[in-house]
Image (cartoon, helix red, strand yellow):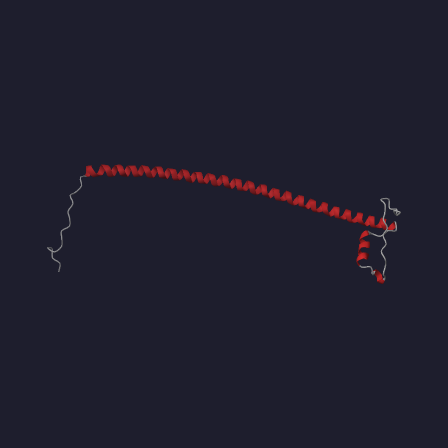
Length: 145
C-alpha cells in the first residue's frame, strides 16, 4: 500500500575520501594503542607493587605472631613461677603461724586468734569463761601497773 512517492528519500552522503579521513583515524588509533599499552604497563607495575606489599605484610604478620607466641609462653612460665612462689610463701606463713601458736601455748598464753573467737562467743564448751589478757612486754613478761 505504500507507494514509492510517499516515502521520503534517504539522504545520500558522498563517499569519504580515504586519505583525508584515514590519517586522523589512524593517528587516533595509534594514540589509543599507545595509551592502552602505557596503562597496561602501569597496571602490571601496580599489581607487582601490591604483590610485594602483601608479601612483606605477610612476613611482618608472621614475625609478630611468632614474637607474641614467645611472649605468651614466657608470661605463662613467669605466672606459674609466681604461683609456685606464692604457694611456698603461703605454706611458710602457715607453718610460722603454727609455730608461733605452739610457742605461745608452751608459754601458757592463748593464741590471739583463739582469744578473738572466744571474745565473739564466750560460751565455748558450754561454760562462761572470762577472757583475761595481760599486757606483755616484748620479752613476754607481764607489765606491772
